[in-house]
Image (cartoon, rainbow, N blue to C red):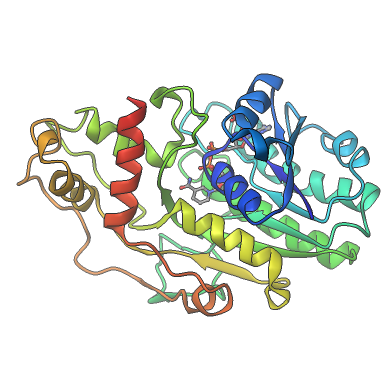
Amino acid sequence: QLVFLTGGSGFIASHILEQLLSNDYRVIVTVRSALKGDKIISSFPEDTRKDISYEIIEDIAQDGAYDEAIKSNPSIDYVIHTASPYHHNLQDPVKDFLDPAIKGTTGILHSILKYAPTSVKRVLLLSSTATILNPSNHAKVYTEEIYGTTTWEEAIGGPLTYRASKIYSERAAFEFIEKEKPAFDLVTLNPSLVFGPPPKHLASLDALNTSNHRLRDMILGKMRENIAPTGPVHIFVDVRDVATAHIRALQIPQASMQRFMIVSDYFSNKRIADTIRERYPQLKDILPAEDSLDDFPESIYGFDVSKSKKMLGIEYRDLKTCVNDAVEAMISQV
Ligand code: NDP
């Protein structure tokens, strides 16, 4: 079966691609340049390469960006939409974040409706717990029944732009289905902060995706003097579990029109540093000091991921496994 995977050069997409191929799917990835497409293909063994091809889409925010790619591949069975900006280089909130996230999502849905309305059976949207959590007024226990909210003013105001880009794009996807009533259905996967081994085709650790930066910065000694604050998010998940959730969500009929919170456990930067120090004692002098402050909050919200465990059968990797495997892969890329 044929899967159309957007944002093929991305961190999470690289693991989804790997797992799709090992589950015998054929995959078309979208990338922004032929160089990126060629690099992805050549990162796989020769006998797998025949199952991957790529389409170039330079900017998903453009009207009709996906039209040609979908039109020329009308026998696609599934679409997995992961392409969306996630970085700290915010200059223009609308142009840099909100347009690619929202128009990129509605754009692909419209292209499928126009050019592959009956062959595509299901669309998966890689969303986020950003669409579930309400940081200004936390729930006691988060579940998929809860929706994060934001105003457009907050969205264009700065610190909440990324979060808003995910809230508005997920909402737009469900509204599209409600309005257009296509033959295909929708599933959203909503992971918390994702850590894990970087893509094999990564050019260098300078090009590492945003959510893995804190691990990289620790092993490069950038937090030797001062451990960085953990930040507003204290829940993580291993990228390989996020990828598995996508594969299962393609295959399980009951997943139709559901959103799945994909979260392993709590973390703090101090806990990450301690994990790395235990596994790599030789890095002791460049890691944050053993007695640095753990800023994990005294009380914190709960989260209930029984739905992803039961329906998708996910067994979440713990922080130790995730951090150790990620760091091992990063060290080999230093
Ligand atoms: P990456 O930055 O590694 O991947 C983002 C992908 O989107 C890249 O392939 C990038 O292409 C592509 N992209 C971004 N903007 C555009 C655009 N305007 N036109 C075309 N392609 C574009 O991020 P992740 O893999 O970490 O994240 C992927 C998705 O997962 C995002 O939707 C993110 O919101 C979501 N997510 C991520 C989490 C995390 O902690 N990593 C947590 C929860 C959700 P290029 O490489 O060419 O720039």
